[in-house]
Image 1 (cartoon, rainbow, N blue to C red):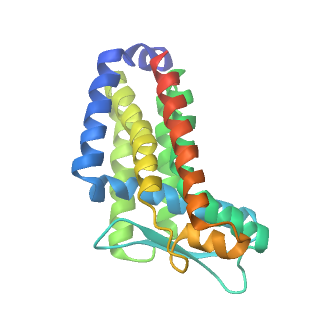
Image 2 (image 1 turned 30 degrees about the vertical axis):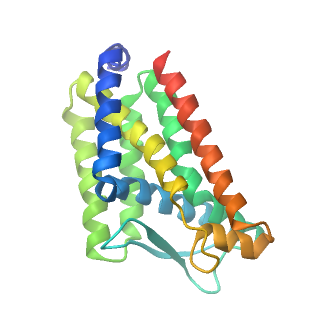
Length: 221
């Protein structure tokens, strides 16, 4: 299957997928943005856990893009852990997208899809409300279906779509991210480091641009 997926990842498949993802990001950003937001919050949760935090739950906003991760008091990451946890959110989608591009180019659509399913199910465990739970399970369920029953072309196209969505959507999310000193990740980083929130936002965009460029280069080889 690996060789078949790699062979199915042709220029027409990539071009069609890229156009479809670009259209979805522009026309239905609030809908497809849920996938990017889930990845964003997963980044907060994973880094927060690894730096000593205890995740209480996360949730998605019902009426707009975005979400939040809450940590148990006093089980929050320390000063350095808090900085890493706050920074992780906006850079996680493009970094995961770049890693997925590397795997997919080698024909590893199946482990890529099932890694996504496992991460989504772990995120679902920490979902706070019905909207978040349904969104996470819907994405996980469709991804699992493609992983189990999808033909090589479908697996290649869907995995490429997921990768490109994280790359393009991650850049979009970073570009429109808030620098509000009290409510945003960049603002939280600014309060903890005295580095202006605008510079943190620029760092998000820089990472996302690099991942998008590198991911497209990898997929286009």
